[in-house]
Length: 197
Image (cartoon, rainbow, N blue to C red; front, top):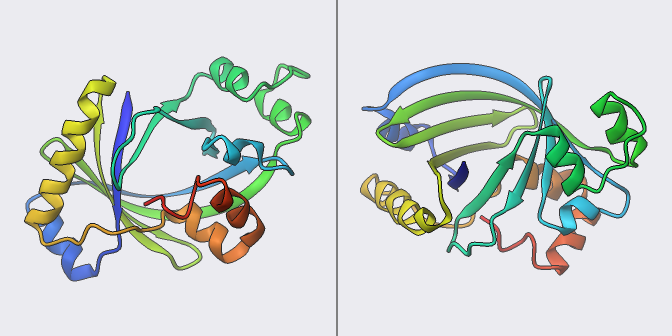
């Protein structure tokens, strides 16, 4: 599956309007641990590697250009993650291999999320433990040729609720801006972040 998403910074009033006719699915609290190495090799490839609960996930760009939109393929198969990150196998335990391959904790973020369903869209309203709030409208597609249509639909939905289409940092980028400026500046110079939304 391919994740097509747009992040928004919303007031509680805007969020209430957006979710008024949506189905509330649940509220949950979870911890994300993001990884990279000392030379930022994961970030330099525009990959985002995390552990949520007991599960590892690697987000990799699809190569499809989308205006003001994040488009990633979510990889959860551990063998594929290891291959994409060129990990050598030192142990049968995947997490041990993460550390033995030189990856270390980049960020640890605790998030309280309210999740909604509105037609073909998922709406995530997140509040991170360091005070950052962000709302994400997401539409999943099966194929790359469906990305552009999904992008148009997300923009149409947002505009129908009077939401402004502008750059908005997700939790990890905001965390990096606040607490790891060297990482941010390195990736910004490469054009990977800074213009991301």
